[in-house]
Amino acid sequence: MSVATSPVTADELLQNYANQRCELVRGELRLMSPAGSEHGFIVNNVAFAVTSAVRAQNLGTVFCAETGFLIQCNPDTVRAPDVGFVRGDRIQGGLTRKFFPGPPDLAVEVLSPGDPASEVHEKAEDWLRAGCQEVWLVDPRLQRVSKLTLVDNEIRHENLDDQLASDVLPGFAMPVSEIFRL
Image: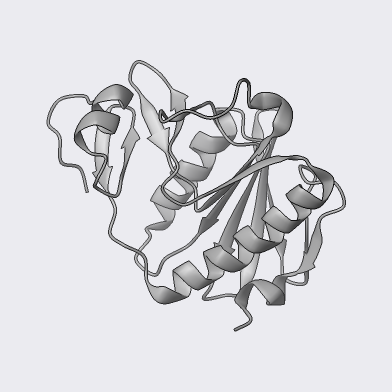
C-alpha cells in the first residue's frame, strides 16, 4: 500500500516514518502489515541457522527484519529483508543508525499468505539487481525454499525441497524441513 503522493527520500523515510513498518521503492512509500506468528517463527529459525554459521566462521554480520538497506538512489529504494547477511569486509568502520549502504550479500524473504507473487518477485529482483549475491524465498505453504541468483544478467531459480546450501555462506547446509519444525 502506497501512502505518499510525492517521492520520498531515504533520509525522509528515516526521519518521518521510523515508527512505521514500511519500505521505500523507487521513491514510493509502501506500508507493510505486521507479520503473523508462523512468519516470525520461521524467520527466527532461519536467522538462528544463518547466525550460527556466520559466527562459527566469523564471516560477517546477520541482520533481522526491519533493517533497511539503501539499494538505489534518485529515486531512493530502501528494502528490508526478513534476514540479511553482510560479509565482514563490507562493514567499514562499524554500523550506524542510518540504512545500510548497499544490499546484503544474502537476503531471505519469508512469504506471507497475502504477499502478491508479483511483489515478491519484484523485491527479489531488486535485491539481485542491486548486487545481492543470493536470495532465498521461503514458502511456508509449500515448505520449500527457492534460491535465486543473478547469472549473466539472468535470474536463476532453484527450488529446494530437501537440503538448503549456500554459495554465500561457505559450508552452510541444513535440511529444509528444519526451517518449518516447531
